[in-house]
Image 1 (cartoon, rainbow, N blue to C red):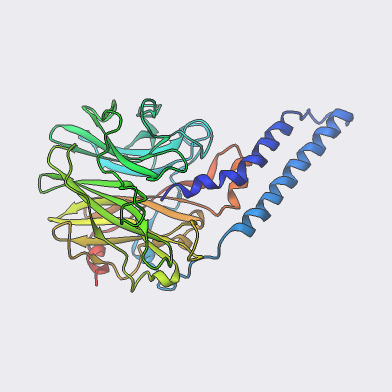
Image 2: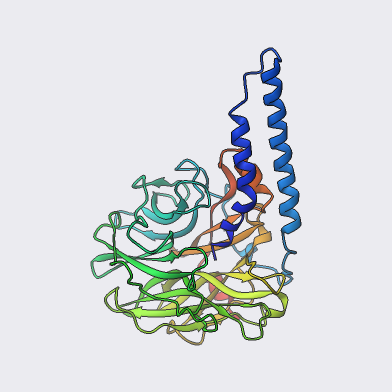
Length: 410
C-alpha cells in the first residue's frame, strides 16, 4: 500500500518550507555583518527545527512488528549498489516507486514506475517508463510522464503494470481518488500501440472497481494490480482492502483476481489469496498481502507481493514489512505459500522503513527481481535537506537461481 508515504509530508513539509525560506536569506560568509549573522541564526533555527522534526517522527513511529521467522535472503544475490534507482536520479526531485519490468523485443528491459511530479510525495503521482540493457542502469524514455490525471476523477495514477496482449500494450493502474473518498481507489486501464504513447479508457470506466462498502473484502479500495498473460487471457491480480471481522487488526488485505479475453471487459472480481495465519498471524499485527506482481513459468502462476502489518492492532497505520511468494497450478486455487518471506525490511539498511512492490522476470535460469523500499522516517529529513536526492528511497535489484523457488515451497 503506497498511500502511507504521503502522510509523512505532514511532518516533513513544515520544516522544509521553513528551511527553504531561511536558506534564501543566506549570504556568502565574508565579513560577519548583521545580515550574515541573521542568516546564520536562521539556518541554525532551521536545522534545530529539523532535529525537532526527528524527535516528533520518532515519538510517533509505532513499535516494529516482530519478525522472528527469518527470511530467505541468503538464497538471493542482492546487488551491492542498491538501490539501483535512487531518489532524485533520472529526474529532479523524483521519488521513485512501484516498478513493473518486462523484456522488450529488442532485448532491452522496460520498467514502468511512478513518481510525484511537482512536489515530493504530493499529487499528482504519475507513471513513467525507463529502459535498461543490464537491469541496473536506467534511463527515462520518454523523459516525461506517460499519463495525466486531467479529465479523470483521480488525483494520482500509481502502481502501473503492463502486458502485451494480442498486438497491443495494456496498462492497469491504481487510480487514487480525493482524500476522504470511499472507495479510496479503483483500478484503471490504458492502451498503447508501442508502449510509449497511451490512451486512457473513457472517464468513469474502471477495469476493476471497489464496492464502497467497507465490510466487503474489496470494499474500501482495490489497488496495486499485477497483470500476466495466462491461458490466452489476461489475469489481473490486485490488492483489495476491506474491514477485518473482529477488527484485530482492522484491515483485511488480500489478493483478488479478475480475468479478461480482450483486455477491457473483466469477469467478476474474486478473492484468491489471503495471508497464511501460521506465517503471518493477525494477532501479531499482520494485516495481509498487497502490491502483487505475477509471472508464469512452466504452466504455473507465481505471485510476488509484500506483507503489510498494523503494529498497534488498531487505527489506520500500515507498514510494509516483508516480501513473499506463492505459486498455483491454475492461478486461482491451491496456492502454495513459501514457509518464510523472501526478504524482510530489516535485511537491508535502505528498506528499514518499508519494503514493497516486487516485480519479477523468470529467464536465463534465474528469478530476477526489482523491488522498492525506503529508510526510516527519520532519514527523510536528510533526504529533504539534500535536495531530495539519495538512497533513502528507491528501487533495488536481486536475483536467485530458478530452482530456489522450488526449494522454498513447503
